[in-house]
Image 1: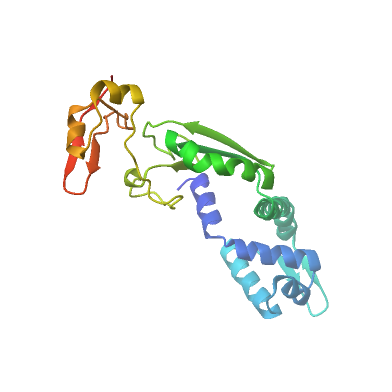
Image 2: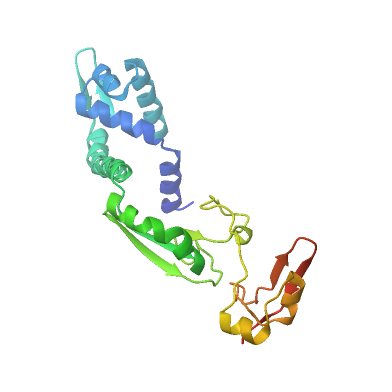
Length: 231
């Protein structure tokens, strides 16, 4: 086993809680006050320190009935890790601030219809409530790997959400209607039954997998499909 491997094992075995206990003792030079800071008893602090010293194989604290002092190894450890723990504490405080006042960039990939039907009505209000949030919105019907391509979230039709993704419904079920221009109806006639759509020129929608969506219309007495065409 080389030295690098040994160091990795030592770091893995060292409990971060024990390091926190050690730093509290180093700050207060008192087991009782360290326990008050940590919310545990003085005996719990002492027990954690003994376990830490046993794993490290070196004494870190000299203690008598009158005083608590750091050994040379303890002073070295305090100097080495106190700054890192301060950085961790600062990072956690930043998380608390983000929880209270969200900010930063959010990348969203959404199908084209979702931009106008779902996101459009709420983006202005989101900007008003959380001015520190920047929205990077990519609108495309192409199916993309949301995580793999660096997006924080995606908006999809319900039937196209991958099984391994966490989904939250954003709208009620969509209801599609058949529409035609007056000019088209004048030229080709007005259908009176869904089955007649198969003889008309239906505009198709290209799906994210590059296939063309085939209309499916359910009438009172029959179900028909209409081949998608481009007039």
